[in-house]
View 1: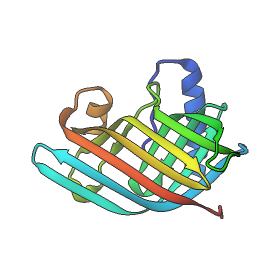
View 2 (view 1 turned 45 degrees about the horizontal axis):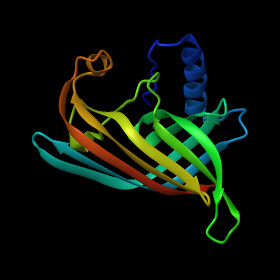
View 3 (view 1 turned 180 degrees about the vertical axis):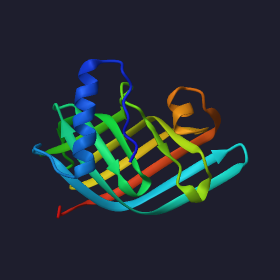
Length: 178
């Protein structure tokens, strides 16, 4: 699982380390610790042509500090941090509906994940823009970004070569934790 951190803020380093440790162990002290089972779709637009991967995926989801979330996608060997908000909105039938939102990958966290091996070697997804929503025990994620070629060290150091773009979606229902 990729979950390194950039050194922009010391608070982020400590919080990020705790986030990553909790994501790796699958346990934590937070009151929100959920798992979603569903399907993902990854579409790459590379300079060598289009490629696609889809399949079943389990996503771990935790919220920290009331406005930070981590999304762990073990099959894709990827963890992302996002800004989190819990909001109450007017419902369709006059009542109120509680929704949770994820917004953009946090810029103080590393946001690259490996491309599935069947789509190419030394390719990385550099997540940039996206949104997620949890409503009625269902998680929807819609992200986009660039595809970068290089080793992890090159990509992390900003030395990778941009070779295309990607879009990533996930739709899953909340599942019981073991």
